[in-house]
Image (cartoon, rainbow, N blue to C red; front, side, top):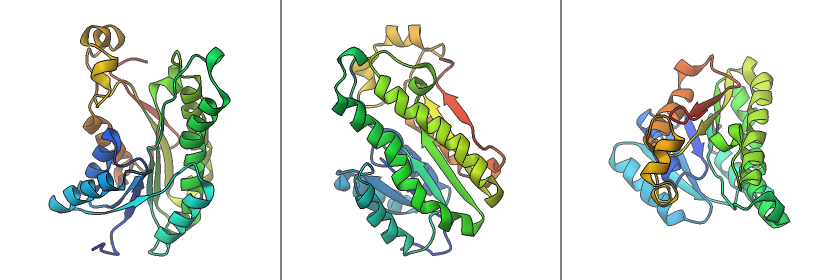
Amino acid sequence: MNDRTMKRALVTGGSGDIGGAICTALAAQGLHVIVHANSGLAKARALVDDIAAAGGSAEAIAFDVSDADASRAAIDGLLAGGPIQVVVNNAGIHDDAPMAGMSPAQWSRVVDVSLNGFFNVTQPLLLPMARTRWGRVVCISSVAGVLGNRGQANYAAAKAGLHGAVKSLAREMASRGITANAVAPGVIAGRMTEQLFPPDQLKAMVPAGRAGTPEEVAALVAFLCSDGAGYINGQVIGINGGMG
């Protein structure tokens, strides 16, 4: 059961590689974690079971962050149990193509999930969060949003949009004890990375000569969500092995 004295954290896309590591790290930090999935509720529930087995507190929820009405209904239901003081916007998708050959649907869907999804999830949480005088908003961006990447104009645009949003939100909410930051990972090990980036290519791309791990990203996110990070606000922090 959720101890109502615990701070609650909502992690969108919480059932993926990076999202799952973030959920695990936040639970280990003593937060009650709401593990969000788009449709993979079984995977989110399995992660909840793992967190509970390790002594943590968590629950699972599923909704489409790009659907404003569905997001609002789900979040209103969560807010009925009290404010959510930590939100990690990790949901995102790729649909890669050179922009010259990109369809309007490819552009819109990627922007809808990463950028509009950030608004749909975060905006309803802000006033209840502000009333507590403490909050943390973290967006998972990408090195592509900083440097750009061939075939990812849609993804880079969505992630760069998050950078402007967190910088603005930081200015709006800092006086209420709320921080807003973005984390921009580079190449992170996961189900797809080994096929996409062979070791020789990784060594050429990444000064560190290796992919990062989801746990390394999660450690940074967990710190940004802690009391100790209260004066870090409006920042885009790279975690990319020196790529840029």
